[in-house]
Image 1 (cartoon, rainbow, N blue to C red):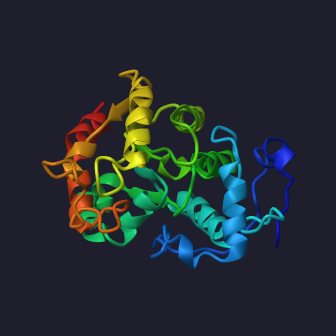
Image 2 (image 1 turned 135 degrees about the vertical axis):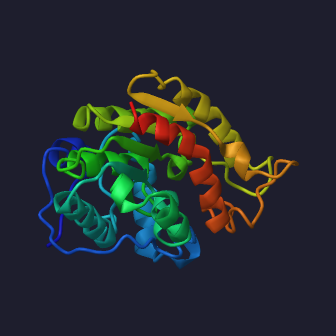
Length: 272
């Protein structure tokens, strides 16, 4: 089944419907999510369209400029909906490929730190997702059948073509949407991780402007902000390949740094 939309009616047509797809996929993240050279011309054109989407308005990831929803995105969305129906989810990780790679590079740390008998964890990360795509997933039922105690959210790095204020606005919309669907859950909102090898990387500067805005969402009751980006960096501010081989996605070591950094707060939130 194929789906189409026109850009000027994304919000009206797609926020209120649930896409009736039934194909399921695993949680393994795409191995080349950030390598633009491997994208087809159609995918590159679609990405240019998605770069124009408002980060705070729900929109699906598209595979073609004609508005066809990306097939892998749709399958993963339906797989996550199916996971929600399978059984309890007490700990939910929600985001893009950085979250999705827990299933590959971070799988051993995940198995060690988040045992099913304690956390009933679920990974709802999709490679390449922007804030508007997470908003669309939420609006189309991804959180409807789960009741997690804690949602770990990290999203926004793929919106890097937008100004810092717009990226923060998109992430804020995600927090609001999660609160609307899961009012009893605690949201552990993570600062966007540093990216790029050098401190002078322009994306580092942009991220440094986004995160202080996100920090203001911490209300001490429902939303808790945590910034541990410095733990990934060397003393001179560079980002080591041992921690992020492509200067974006953590290695196994990087996922261990992540797990260590959030564990105290995670334990606190689980006992509230």
